[in-house]
Image (spheres, each protein chain N blue to C red):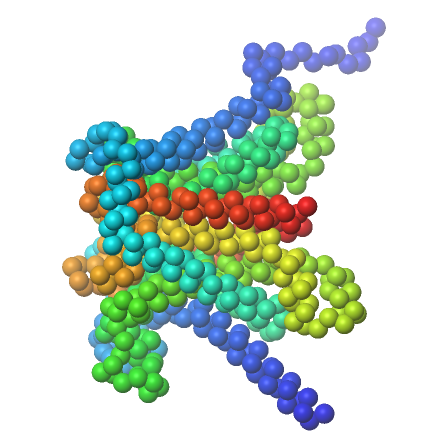
Length: 309
Length: 282
């Protein structure tokens, strides 16, 4: 009798049962990522919380519990209160400016015109390029002697050479400068977010509204804006979180100065915790970010969920 | 009729005015990098010259100085090593995790995925103090390997999230067919899911690399030895002697480091956005 097909006998692997069970394999697959994140994000986060209620410094690494005295110390310090205030100004100033620029940029880039792809590619640059490098370029543009901005203003006879502003040396102008740089860094992101939202609005909805007599602004604010709110909200979460906790722009452009006028939470946490080695007070300063971040994230997630239902 | 023609002209003019405004706003700082890096110092530091173009012929002097007299090539190499190692770690952990969350763990996978992604929002400025103690404990202070250890904390969440989207978009029937044909689940993942999601994997590789290039805070915190710095940190902090900024060299270095990232972003932007917004647009 001819054998048509012989069953292939595979050497049974000892691990075969693990590799074949859906739940087992699922857990094994996800474990390394979870472990990595738990060990290097979760545990450090708890450590940061504990540092803030301890007397830990790099010179005297003790875990002695001191209660809330670190927080009392920093809140009583007027420099810290100014830092907290600066952080809010920096965050909301640059987010509002970035959103306005983003909204208008998106409206401009929606309309076809020759060279639109090229302009779009260039407009992404501020967000793509490493922020530390772009910040250095801006610092050079704000240079006290060779500022190209001042040169232009003088050449246009807007100002006189003797009264040329020292952008990073004057407290108000320095704050304005870091806000502008941060808004500049985020506006391409806002444009992309707005574009993604607007192009996802179904054309028939817009057509129906037009037939019903809705004009440009009405379509814009009563149909498109509510429909793209969820995606804009997500964009805003990212913007606020990354700005509120930023360190690099301030560190490179003004180093917190002049006299603390642009010091923000991230910067002061770095100065206290890393440069001075006072880990416990540094951690307490950094922890002031946490409630704000939690509120923003929870509010946005809720908002998104409510819109979806 | 004439009136509407005038309105049309005004409208066109203001539209192209707006295009120009955004064009200049976005591009000028980079134009400034380019022009500074090719200018003679005598031209650069002369306020009576018009700064927007070359008054003396362009020069490669700054680039030469950068490559010959500074640690620039070391930084470039460091960044490359860091990028490659972090990419490897990220792929090995994020690929199976994303597959598991998308396919194997059912409804819990979605929630767990969002949980992992939210850790991407935990800022470096909150974690750098404890992490600097961890790095010191492992005796990695002042070494670029500390960055190889720490950078996956933000690349893994981000890439797991991106890859989850890719795996979900694959039809599960292909892997099911492989399993029916005698493949193990693991085999189906290796032989079917991975080859089919190569575009996703490529995206992840590019983004991991650019994320490591863009990072500044951890590098600043952990690495102060000049020869261990990645390129971003080196260019931004190491080309200054006392109060003197070597602007030509700084801009030349910034330019070299920016170009690959800019190209990568423009090529993969749409995937990045759909990853970050995670289906908020339907």
